[in-house]
Length: 571
Image (cartoon, rainbow, N blue to C red; front, side, top):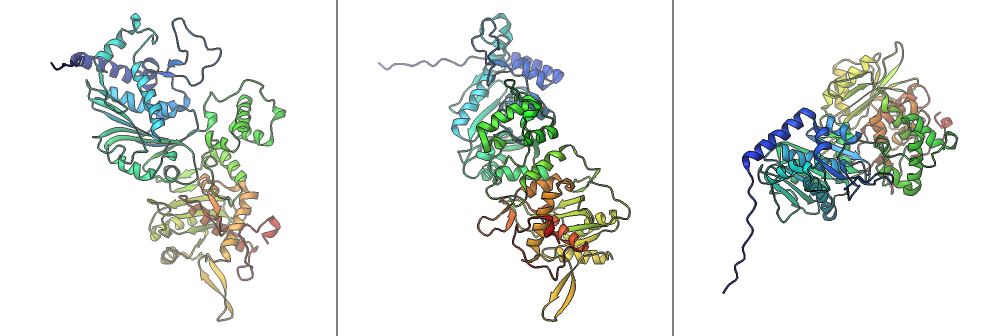
C-alpha cells in the first residue's frame, strides 16, 4: 500500500486585516518620516558593541539594536534621487541602509513592488540576505528577545497577515498579501536581474569590485527597472579606472549625467574617533596639522586616523577616503604634484564660485578687474572616446595673464560654433581677453566662427618657416612634439608652486589622474578619465608665458616631459 505524504497547507491571511495594517503603517510613515519609521520598526546588528554597553534584562544579544540612521544615512535619505551613485568608505552602513530603506520598506509600503540587491559575489550575497531577513523577521517587534511578550502583539499580527511570506529556493522574500518581493542576487551571474518583471528598486553594492564586465551587467539589469523605479550604485574606491570610477566621474562632473554623485569622507562618520591615548597638539605631524586645519578634525579623530594609517598604510585612503581623488589608486605615476593637488582640493571644499550658469557648464570664480589682461585657452573636442559611452569635451579656462589665477572655466560637449560663442562670452566678460585655441579637432571651425563674429583678439603662434627662411604667425596654438612637453612642464611647475591660484576642483580631479605612460613616459589621462581641463590649462599657461616674454616659440628648445625643476627654468 503506497504511503501518502500530506503537505501542511499554507496559513491563510486575512486580506482585509492586511489592508488595515498597511494603511496604519503608511500613515505612520507619512506622518513621522523615514528615520522615525526605521527607529521604531527595524532592528539591526550593531557592528562592534562597546565593552560598557549594558545588557538589558531578558536580552541575549546586546548587538541587536534599533536601527537609528547615522548622519551619513540621514543625509542620503534627504538628498537621494531616482538615480544615485555613491562613493563611500568602509563600515559607513550604506549597504545596510540601502537594504532597509530602499528595498525592504518600499516593498512593504508600496504593494506590488519588486526590489533587487546585486552583491559582488555569492558569498557577500548570502551576508546581505541575512541583513534583509533579520530586518524582516524583527519588523515591528517592541521586545525582540521574547516572542510571547505582550508588547509584541502588533508584530505577531502584522506577520500573520500583511507580511505573510512565502519563500522561493533563491535568496528571496515574497509578501503574498501585498504582492511584493525582494531578491538578493550576485554580479557573478551574467543574467542577473534578467526576466524579473518590472523591478521597482535596484540596489547595486560594491560595483567597483564586480567581476566580468560590470558595465554590461548593469546595462542588462537596468532594462528590467521600470521607468519610475530607483537605481543606486555604491562602492568603496578601487583603481582609477573601470566602470564604477568612470560613472562616478560622469555623475560628479556632467550636469546631464544619469546618476547623482554622493561622496562621504571618513570624518563625517561620528564613530571614527579614538578616546584612548589621545594625541596632544604638539605631538601632531605636519600632515596631521595641515588636514586638521582644513577639515576641522578633533584630536580624537586625528588619533583614530594615525592608528588606522599605521595598520592600513597606503590602503587607508582607499578604505577611509578623505577626498574623492586620492581614494582611487593610480596604476601609474602621476605627472603633477599629488600632495599639492590634494591639499588644494581640501581647501576648495568650502569655496564657492560667485556665479554658475544654469546648465553648470560655465563657472566664474573671480570677478574681472578693470584694466587687467586675461586669456581664454580653448581645448576643442576631437570626438575621441574616453570610455565605451563617453566622449571628450570642449574645455576652456580663463587666466589672469599676470598671475596665472583661474577666473573662469567651461566644459561641455557642444558643436564648435557654440564653443566659439562660449569662448566669446567669457572673453568679453573679462576685458575682451585674448582667445588661444588649439588648432586640432574642431579648433579651426572655432576660429572661423570667432572671425565671423569679428573678434580680433586671437592668439597667433610665431613659427619658423624653414622653406621660406622666415618667421610667420598662424592663428591657434599647435600641439607639437616641442610645444606640448614645454606646456605640460610649465603647468606642472605652476601646480607645484602656485597651487593657491587654482580655483577649479574639477581640474584638480583630472590633474590627479593625469599620469605618465609607463612605456613612453608621455603624460595622459588614466584609462576612463578625462584630460580636457588639463589640456586647456597647459595651453593657457604656455601662451601666458609667451605674452609675458618668458617663452619665445621660435627660439625655445625642446624638452623632455618632467624636465622642469625650478622657477629659474621658466625663463
